[in-house]
Length: 80
Image (cartoon, rainbow, N blue to C red; front, side, top):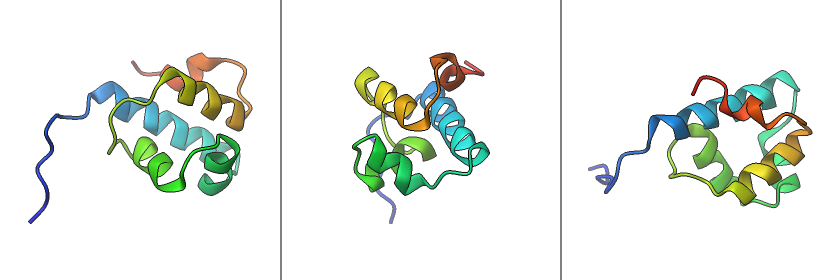
């Protein structure tokens, strides 16, 4: 039986995760490479980009942006 979530994941978190996933794909990068470059555990990073984890901190968003080599952080927030 699946574990019941105590709090729902906000839609904005899923959108940001989807944007990160799209950038990874468009740049032809590997998820593991981005996670390592951002100094994040691969499973935690996968939960972030799949929308299965609560909000990631600003520090993590900055590290992910740097790992993706994007200069305009607004790319992460498109669609919000």
